[in-house]
Image 1 (tube, rainbow, N blue to C red):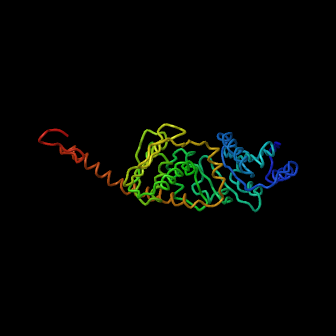
Image 2: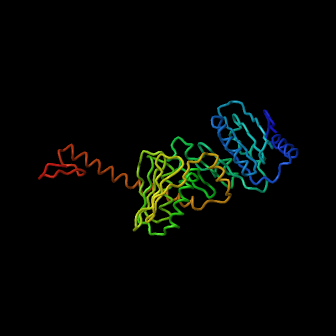
Image 3: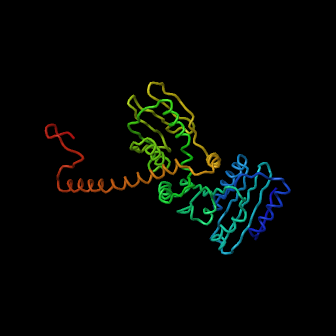
Length: 338
């Protein structure tokens, strides 16, 4: 059943929802998910929502904001039944009403049940203070949907509130599960760790932060050609624990000391799988919060090191300009070789 409402109000949408539910017999919805997006990403987001609704009976409110349109207007589309146990409501909000989206969403939330808010693309600096984010018990962002994913992840770290999470973290679940299983299989003291990925890769930085927080060793980030995370190496007294994926989208080479190398499944997952996983928990993720705090610590540490490196480089250039010997390269006077 699809119900179209034009130039409507939140009250009329709610009345139509109640009528549709009585006709279709929809009941037992577990939670409300509110998705804030734009018309450009709407189709992709709606597909993910419909897939999530099949696994999690819920009410899904997709808020499509169009602040550029002058006229204040609310149009709605309600989907009930049609093969999935829940409600999917698209709310197209235009003009000045965008500034009051929270007031439109509030009457449509399921009573006495959790509310999850998801921003698939750009998100507020502090989601918990956003007019819609404040309605949520959990708030899901996705740094990869931002123009600068790594900078966006740092913003998440600086403004973290319990209940926040990011799909950057969800993308790491298979990696984290494999590494945790390897340490259960081969318990050993980890001396050092390396995360290999393409430059400025947000998941890789978060992975390094998680490893550092859990293992208590400084983790080195090594740049590769990618794509994404290409390898993780944990050094032990007997040898390295390694997970190396390279360009494969489905599998990785896995090895632990004393055992032959083998291939393991390590799939790159799409947005449908990621959001479905996040909806399986309604409580705050303490491990994510710990990892994000470590991400901040690593960022501050890198910032302190940067001026030292810059000063050394400047001194090096000055030495060359004066005809001196660069500290980075010295000449063996006996052989004349560098």
